[in-house]
Length: 500
Image (cartoon, rainbow, N blue to C red):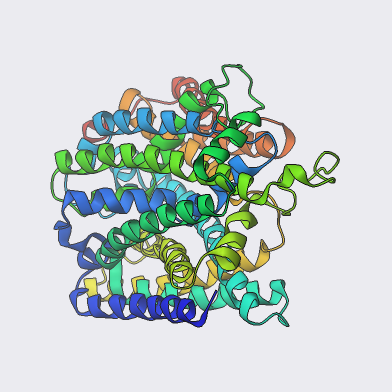
């Protein structure tokens, strides 16, 4: 990498910060700050959904999946579940989001069950999203650390990662603090174009570095069975199978895209349910194409680095040899082999993905669902001030999480998806209860959620069950435990709480 790359990278970071400040004057109310006055076009929301769903984790982790020994395209099976889940959400949930003027999706639970369920779901979201975005920040910092050590080889990689986490975290906080949700969405529109262009350019550069180009990479991929798409084995312990992907991926998407404030908040930025559905469904086609592309980049990297030619390859236990983890493969190529200027553009695209943070969504949830019940009579300016304060606090928390996880070699993609599925499953379960079980009142629903959370923690830490099944089990345990418990409690007598 050259100094031109540094100019592009830091110019981008400065530009993003200034862009957020530019939107500061528009944030006069909490509705402006959280949903952009509900005036964002559906196509911008679609781009935002894609950018949010794929982001840094796609850019860095997915190529590492195909690069690894025995790695292939089986991850696509999960994406099939993503597509099915989008269809279910568009039919089942999106029409409900536009009944009234919601600022968070969990306000629906308050209408159906009461405040306790809403606060529990909101708390779970805050916990899960902070962990997931702390991981995202760490991934991006790893890329910046590689850039830094390429210019200053006397600095250890660990020190560079720490400095990078803090620097990127500060930029993320400043941008979100001033810009609000509308600024986040419009930056994500730009971000999507930048990192798709960067990925295509990177694929071309990698292919040019392979003796024989794309044809040779495809041949090597076939030789090492990299293009295997489907595994129809029915097992609960393997992460990427057809059934885990279709069923588990569907329930994971129903939870993340249907009951998670981070993504539902984007739908609320438009004014009609059909526009929100159009944004969600169209994003699915782009996501499928993206995942295929990034997996193919992993095959190109496998052919470029040709680890199979090294004598240690047959005996090593490290699947991503000669790298210690799959998340380090693509950053190494970007910083060491991409031509000047283009490398800076790709790194800037990765940074953009990290800066599309969840700080605004967490602040919206914390203020509207967790703070207002205790301070119900304050004016809107007070709540807007609290939103800014919480944005700052949450940003610091995510920085600390990234610092704590910096020495973990497990794939960040697995980390992020498993955390999301672990906690979102019980939340999805209570939304399904509200939709299909009219007799279930708040207490049985609360029992179902608590039992599901305990069981899911046991499954996570005491069993080999793959994370792709977490969303399915978490929601079904919540659903059926609440249904059974409902026979011990009187049905909900409030007519207004009969359905979501």
